[in-house]
Amino acid sequence: MHSDSSMAKQKQPLTGKALIKEVCRRIRVARSYWDAHNNPACRRERDRALALYNTLTKEQKEQIPQVLRVWLRYRSEKYFGAHRTPPKSKRKSK
Image (cartoon, rainbow, N blue to C red; front, side, top):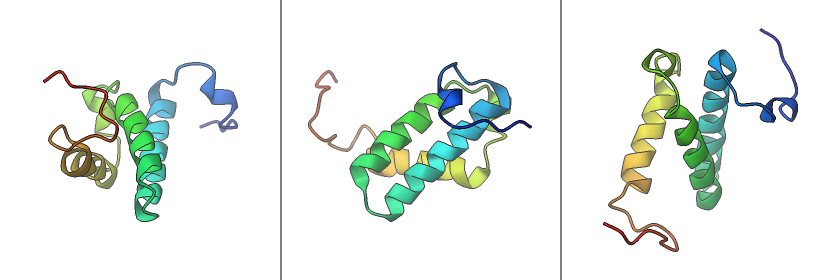
């Protein structure tokens, strides 16, 4: 497992273990924003985490720690799901 600075690895799309690690990192960052009651930042990080998470294969998703997956899903549904009024709503098509 090689470590490179977080700046360097943003250039090319992440794959494999690096991608899984990045998803975990983003979920943890979002969780820390959540705990700090910083909702806009939390939403932004969670959206990024979810976007990356959705690119994972089923096998890769299973490598994400359960606690992080549950948090992502739970927060997604309960607080940021389609039934909630999004801030400054951009999408009216439903």
